[in-house]
Structure formats: structure tokens, C-alpha cells
Image (cartoon, one colour):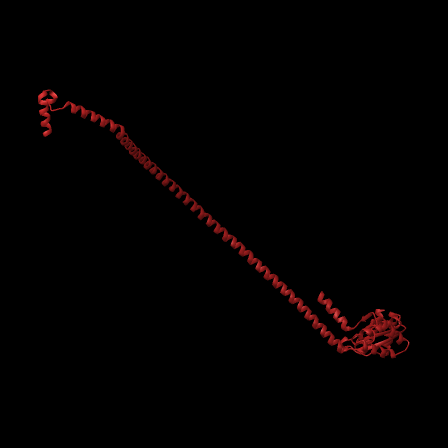
Length: 178
Length: 131
């Protein structure tokens, strides 16, 4: 209030319009220069930094948006890949199960064949053993029979053979040996 | 201690002396064997002396039979041995063994004839077992 009063009093003497309006043109010019100077300073030092920050911020936002889109696309791709892998895994699992069943079947068949061969071999060995045992028993029986016959012959000859036929036997043996 | 001599030399000497009718050589041989501690070799000396005598024409034959031999059978055996060995004189050493059953087993130096029933049975048994 004091300031305005002072300005009114100062300009009442000059009587010009600016004074009538209460505007001090010198002060106005100073203020204009100061404003321009301020604008120049801001334009020189503040606005570039501020714009740069804003641009950077905008760029970060754009990057984040792009990254988000990329991540979404990657997630979709991953889901697709996952589904494909799952399908592949299911197919492989089915194949593995089928192969395992086939192999199990083959193993069972092979085992049956092996068991059959082993059984046949054991039976053949048993037959051979029995054959050998029978042959050995037959030979032993024959040998024992021969022994018995020889012993019986010795006993009989020992009893029935006398001196006279023995001398004839000796004479014949000597004659044959000449 | 008496010096050991070769068995061949000793047996040849003893056989020669025996052929000459000197029976005292038997005692000398016994003394020699005792002195030289060769009593266990007696059987070998006797065999060698018999071999030497056989070479010189005196054959000693071991005859094993089941029964004792008659004079006629002995004659046959003497003739057989003389024909086989060319001996000038034959002496028989008889052995009676009932286990031979029959026939005779004749052993002369370097030769044996076995026609006993026991041997024939053994041969038959062996052949039948092999068959």
C-alpha cells in the first residue's frame, strides 16, 4: 500500500499515462530485462536438463512398454513351447510305454524259450546220466557174473580134477608147446 | 672186510665150480655174502648162478603143479626142457600148489611156460571183461 502510494505520488507530477496507471516504465524495463534474463537462463540451463529428463523418462516408459510387450510375447511363446514340449513328452511317454510293453513281451518270450531249452538240456543230461549209470551197472553186473562163474569153475575144477587127467593135460600142453 | 666183487664175476665163478663138482663153493659164497652184507641179494645171486649154469648146459627148472609129478611126467618135462634150451642136464624143482587147479607152470632161466587151469581162467576172465 505504501509502495503504490509512493508510486502515485511520484507520477502525479509528470502526469503521463504510465504514471497515471501507476506503472514506472523504468522499473518495467528492468523487470522485462530481468524476465528475459530469467527466461534466457532457464532456457540455457534448466529447460534442457528438464527436457532431457522428460525425454529420458518418456524413453524409459516406452522401453518398459516395449519390454512388457516383448515379455508378454515371450510368455505366449513360452506357453506355446511348453505345450509343444508337453505334447512331445506325452508322445514320447506313449512311445516309451509301448516300447517297454514290447520289450517286456520279448523278455517273457525269450525267458520262456530259455527255460524250455534249459529244461530240455537238464532232461537230456538226466537221460544221459541214467544211460551211463545203467551201462556202468550192466558192466559191473557182467564183471561180477564173470567173477562168480570163474570162482564156481575153480571150485568145480578143483574138486573134479584128479591127478590122472592132470598128467594127461600136462603131457598135452608140453606137446602143444614144442 | 672183504672186497666187494661184481655179481656177474662171482656167480660165474660159483657156477663153474659147481659144474666141476666142488660144492664147498656154496659155503664160500654164503660167507662172502655175510661178510659183504649182501644177504638180501641172495635170491639174485641164486638166479644169476642158475642162469650161468643154464648157459653152460645145466638147467634148473621150477615146475608148479596141482598134484605131485609122476616119473613119466617128469621125464616128459625133462625132455621138453632139454629140447627147448639145449641143456645137457636138467634138474627139476617141484612145487605143488592146489590153487593152480591143473596143468603146469614151468620156469626156466629166461623163459616161462604157464598152462595152468588157473592162468587159463584168469585169461578168459580178462578177455570177457574187455569184450
